[in-house]
Image (cartoon, rainbow, N blue to C red; front, top):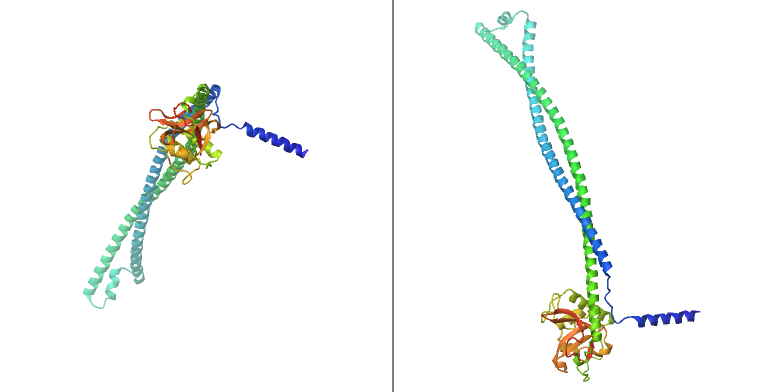
Length: 400
């Protein structure tokens, strides 16, 4: 049983290996697939357009709410300044009342002391003073004058106190009322500011969500567009490959090939099959990108024939000293020669004016199926063409 399984596995593996094509054929999307891709792209574009409209409207609302919030903030800051001024006035009025109250208290004490003295001595001051005097009539006159002045001073102080007390009490009452009203106004403005800030914040969150949706839809649109474009390019290339392949089978072409004189190249290769296919893919990408032909250029924006070969294999992982920038003739002696009937994708094709290595003037990369990728000329640029489309094909290819 085990032996049978091994035998079946070996047969399957052999079939798989023998069925492996020598080159990867470009997939050919159907017109229906391309139409579906266009429809999907249009749907993404419509969704992105609708999302953009919502985002624009939300941004407009946000701008209005931002203005309201800014106005509320300005009013709140003005109310804070007015509250500070009202508080300052109230404190000043309270301090003034405190000072006048102290002055009146002092006057009260003075007048109260005089009244107490008069009561203790009995009678009026005019009767007592002469008795207390020990220096005669002049001293009496001086004392009477001093007492009279003191009485007038305290009377004036009392009057001022009463007036100041009324003014201070009224100022304090008004200042306290103004401060209380301003505190209420400040609280109202602060509440309005909080509501405005909250509305603006909520709208900003909505704008952020809509922006994220818009960004995601734009990415999806770009992806759908790229997918549709890729399908179209693949179909165009597949159609081109089919047409050229048919042409290759119908072209005798052997008259364009020099006879084999037995030239030898290297005896070994330096690239793996995977690297050769990678070089083919690179060359294909440059051709599809319609890169121009510029003599002496080796990419990434333009190429000449040997420059394309050099860049293709460099991108596949070959580098100095195993791989260097040479001209077409030198590449012919720096690669292993294989028969044209044994060509594989990635092998190099050479074209000469005469049947000699020294007259080789052009080099291309074999694509498979009788086709090649090449940097042709300034007039034609980088193209995909039949390997027999150029006269003077050397009778062997070069395997890197």
